[in-house]
Amino acid sequence: MTYTYNITGMTCNNCVAKVKSELLKLEQVVSAEVQLDAPQATVTMDKHIATETLQQAIGKYKIAEARNVISPGADAAVESNSYYPIFLIFGYIAGVSLLVQFTKGSFNIMGWMANFMAGFFMVFSFFKLLNIKGFAEGYSTYDVIAKRFYGYGYVYPFIELLLGVAYLTNFQPLITNIVALAIMSISTIGVVQSLVKKTDFQCACLGTIIKLPLSKVTLFEDALMVVMSAAMLLYLL
Image (cartoon, rainbow, N blue to C red):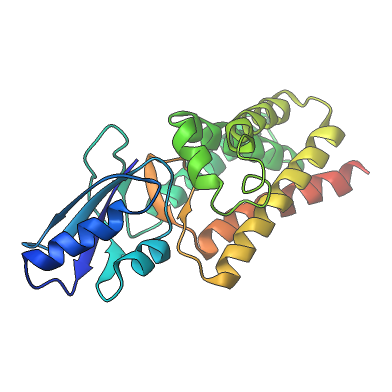
């Protein structure tokens, strides 16, 4: 995966050489290109490195991940300062779920939530599966299970996909909601821990195709799934 960073504090070619040298000392860094004009560093890494770790490595120079750019390389992805993509996806899923209910001639809140959950899990698993390796690397930086068991990041997108199919087909609603509640609660814990520590991680909710920083929006997304699955579980009980 390749990221582009803005570097401030470099005044000469010696500074450029120093920054590049320190970045290359990091175990996960595959290559690093640093330029003085429009001071930036393009870093290719085999596992995501938090910006704060890069900052510690280069010392007095200031580093910040560049936004609204497309990083070169096969793992390039669109980066954005806004959460417009995720809100747009939520809007589409909510709208389609409403249309499904209206075609039945009446509106049922539980039916709408089941359709919403189906759309959410299937769409978000799709983005993760576009680059499952990149997702697993990013997810392992903040999820409480993935940090301990790296392989969980490879399994998680398929869990989401199966949950989406289960909600869509109304398969064992009680079991489906219990699993969804457990999975999303665990995911929420990891997000909360990272936000409390104010760590600078990329949100892995949309895989590596659209890069978004981990923030309260990520927390809202996970918490909403927890609330919906809990509400449907209570209704079934």
